[in-house]
Image 1: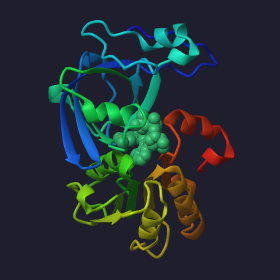
Image 2 (image 1 turned 60 degrees about the vertical axis):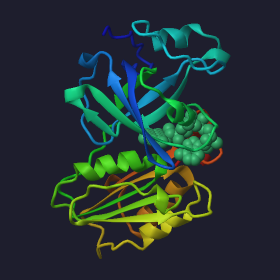
Image 3 (image 1 turned 90 degrees about the horizontal axis):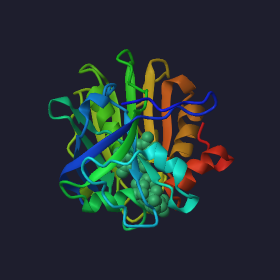
Image 4 (image 1 turned 90 degrees about the vertical axis):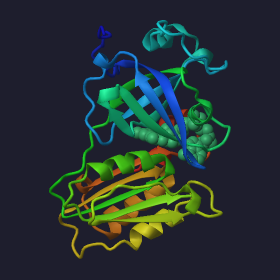
Length: 286
Ligand SMILES: Cc1cc2nc3c(=O)[nH]c(=O)nc-3n(C[C@H](O)[C@H](O)[C@H](O)COP(=O)(O)OP(=O)(O)OC[C@H]3O[C@@H](n4cnc5c(N)ncnc54)[C@H](O)[C@@H]3O)c2cc1C
């Protein structure tokens, strides 16, 4: 693939991957997996699990998001430069739950959060043969094999990343995995090292993004006496992550380098608003 020109001040352009849906599989009432083939696998060179993500591209926000025809994948960066503001493609971040190199395949797991938005509704209806553009992958964080105790905490949107992290831990890892979903019907199978206790917590009637269940579960985890050697991966709704920041860096006394803390979405905000708010105090977690 030819590299797009980069001006000194511009962010590097992520490579474009053209994907074709192979399968849609319901994992729980609130989560669907879409298995996608990579059209040009030679472009997909740098995948190192676990926390890799792409930006999925929804081409025409004013229209029906038509699937690009085979062999006619539009160039995202050309469209971005040429289309007027109200026709700009929309992008949404999604974790690569698994990369299967022998089948040139990516798995992505989508929260079914209703009819609003682009990505959730697209995944709910994705059919074999549908095509979509992804930009990336990005994401650098990986768990340290040296950590004495690991906490992995996530809500639904970050569960794909959290499970990829848990699968990447060494067999000797010790710690806890705390996963928040709506109800016991949303629980998924987890493969974790024997020393990682897995605990599911339920929002029950509270709305997604309600901070209490996840924060309480993190407070109640079997923390070691001292923070040395602890590592934390905590990703999810923005306000939950702010509450966890106070818990982890404040009450628990962890250093910033010990913690991967990231907001994945914000209640009542589309991703565009959520991303734009990162430049304002309300959007800042660390
Ligand atoms: C690095 C990264 C990786 C991510 N990986 C995943 C992933 O693997 N799977 C995944 O499902 N999400 C993931 N997310 C979160 C996802 O990008 C957002 O949830 C995104 O807003 C979904 O886009 P949408 O078009 O469906 O909804 P939008 O158009 O962005 O939002 C429409 C409405 O739905 C609400 N909404 C959005 N997401 C949720 C949710 N999870 N629960 C309840 N309400 C919601 C919004 O607040 C808004 O009111 C990731 C985010 C980041 C930053």
